[in-house]
Image (cartoon, rainbow, N blue to C red):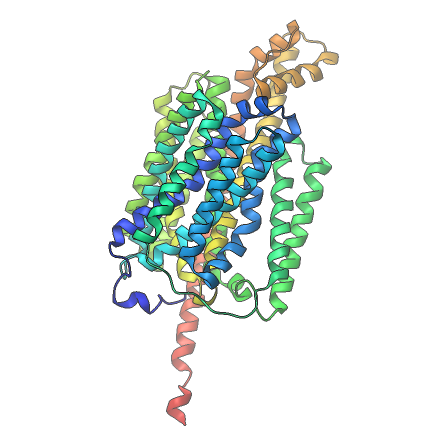
Length: 527
């Protein structure tokens, strides 16, 4: 693993390391609040701007695509130009983007603004994460990451609740929340955060950055279409193209003299474990956030406000356990043990949710979500520390930004896969219920379409068959929910086993490298 920079050996360069880390948590929380508020406001915004179904889907995902395409180049620019400068620029971009969204009278302006906001909040998150090691007290990086996680989650809870209330007034007002927060943070950045030294290097690998950007856009766009069917060309073509481009990117990076970050990292068991675990916990979080929200809405008839409050059980335990994980964490086997317990919590929480029914009280689900939240923290905090430890000084920005890239991949896959599973098993259950109710087979297809329309727009379809189908939505969705979270729990458990094996391999590699360095004579002493 790479060593801590010399500037940190003596003391933290921040006037108040604790305040600096907490402020970085606030900055990271902006990236969580922005899409949450946008998702709450999208229904009213789409109606106001006259968006069609396909455009609504693009409007909901365009910020994520822009973030994924630009986060690595922004990390590289932070190394070369100065991380504090890029952080300030990222906040300005986020402000401009969401202000455009709030003021735009047309769909094109909304889309352009959300794309800009995605670039800004993504770069803000990556810069905030990379800053933690620099401002943390010597030997306290893991504890600092725990505090960073706590503040980020806490700020997200407050910000999303405020955003939800503002959206109830007007969606345009809600979209000004992030610009307001970012504006205050922009003024505080030079006061709280010290400037990080620039990292000089060779000419950037523009080809590699272009390939990885296109690969991310293609793959994420394709995965987002999974709910329409795994055989659908809209899913297959971009997803496969993205995978091919990932392979092309790896081949290119192995041959160029100035890769975005060292290809040798891909051969490191520890780095591979950090990547796999990042995909796993983001996949699990996306699955739980989306599917519990839909379960409460469609099965238990929660209001949007109740749904938002329902998620707090998971987020509170996520934040609190993150502090505990940071304090308990030590290099080596301690990290492995924490991740092991974390994956038990993640997989176990998902498997417990697979047994809920339409009459399950909230407090029972809250206990399951509390367990799941602990699992999230015990995986995500050590995973963050692994990325920080593995990042070489020469490419610190891109490597730490890759954590965000990995997270976006896992989160998108969690949304898409869980939606596809709920759709498949829920539709099967719905058709079975309609057949038992005596609905003719010739009308089943239209009944399913009516239910999908109801879920997308909230509008009831006319006709007795449609009413029967919509009345069966709750039990059918519950059945699909059970299968989706159960299968996801098994998948996350398997990813946990792979992570542990990769960590064991990585620790052996570190020991072997240490032994080799001791056996290799010092050229200076032999001359």
